[in-house]
Length: 323
Image (cartoon, rainbow, N blue to C red; front, side, top):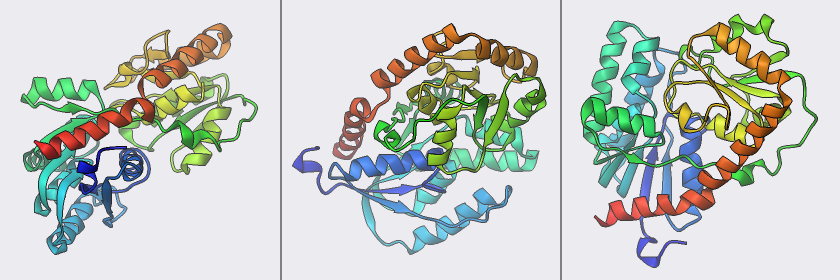
């Protein structure tokens, strides 16, 4: 528990959603901090669920909501760039922005030039709205410093191992699994292009609830992460904990988790042939599978559980508030 001095610390979280990747991470942090005498409020904002309208509608509706919000907060924490734009109108003593991946580069990869230009403006404005920046990836931390001279606090995303208690243990199936959005940056099309050459069934979890996804992951022989761009995928940590070997592309912060031939297998991005070979080779190499499973499982327990990271979160918020 934190000390009495921090009992009245109230924080507003802003995120497009509080499920899935970034939003799920924000929600898990809010749960733990609420259990430790922080007062976390989640701002839920609607959006239009259409590709090119999702972020703009979220930003517009969010700005309207913040204008009407007359409350004052000790801290406001925006969990992505669109949320960072929204938090400008919030009355808070300090403002935090979390950056996941290289935002403007991700926008470049999947949108037109005009939208890409708007993405760069949005990123700049969101950063200017923040008093402090955080990221869960050392790659992002290093890249933003080298490109823009920005100092970013490294705040890893923990894995709540207690969430896995009710995930049923079942017999392995002859399948490999992809877990993530059906989007260009996740490289799902790359995996689909080699699917018929893989010596097992391929399962795609793109819109499945977390518990069912973890059940499928636990049943799978391998997790394949064929991304073109990434920050630090939480699903890799989940696979590590469930002792499912991982094959992933060497992009973003993935190599912070996947150490080649130690905790997983790394392959070049956008190279279907090498990805296919790596998958089929590992499916047949039972000895290496066991080595990867044990190393990855121990790596998670040593570095990414709440037991290890909760004190870091508590210290981060308290120090920021008391500055």
